[in-house]
Amino acid sequence: MLHGRLLGGLAARSLEEHHAEPGLRFARLTVDLFRNSPMLPVTVETTLVRNGRRIRVADAVLSTEQGVIARASAVLLRESEQPDGERSLVTPAWDQAPPAAPPVEGDGWRPPFDLWWVTPFDAQGRAWMRERHPLVDDEPLTPFVRAALAADFASPLANTQPGGLRFINADYTLTLARLPESDLIGVEATGHVSAGGVATGQVTMHDTAGPLGFCVVTALANPVIGGR
Image 1 (tube, rainbow, N blue to C red):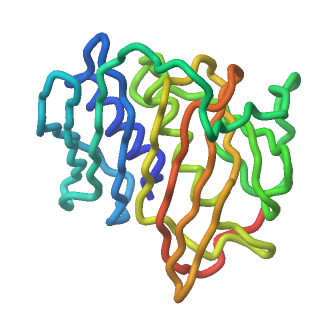
Image 2: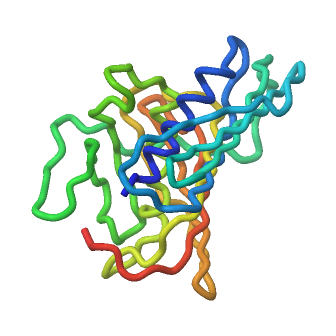
């Protein structure tokens, strides 16, 4: 099946290609993953919804020959002068140094990206990630696409438990104060709430310069998906 992370990455790529502009910053990307799809060619169509002086909104629809499989919405905000003064609440920089050696690959699931576990998968998840494959042909990954690919990992990181992953995400919303400055992205589970088979989870996203944003997911109860 087509991985949800690929659909989010493709949506981000097309939205950036058609709607990016110097001085406008991608501040939010919401990806709705409402239909599984086999490995088929994917078409992405984007639409400009709002083009104001300080805010731009654009949508994307992802389809295969079987119909619409996902959709996305992006909000771009105009950069401006940062307000001075101290903040009442500031997310601290991660205390975990970037990895200095290649990741260790075990006998179980092997992701299609480099992954360094900082804490065990079934604990309060913390990991470093780095893409090692292009998304489309030999195109270099942009920072925004890199962040969109990494964001899908929020669901297994925030929703896992001892014995496996019992939730599958229906969407994810990535919010960014800035784009990642490095190819390494750190993801840190910072919240999970669930009841009646419905869950919401949250991660803080970092790069080697510090925190850069958050990702929130909603998820449905699902039979156990693997373990570590």
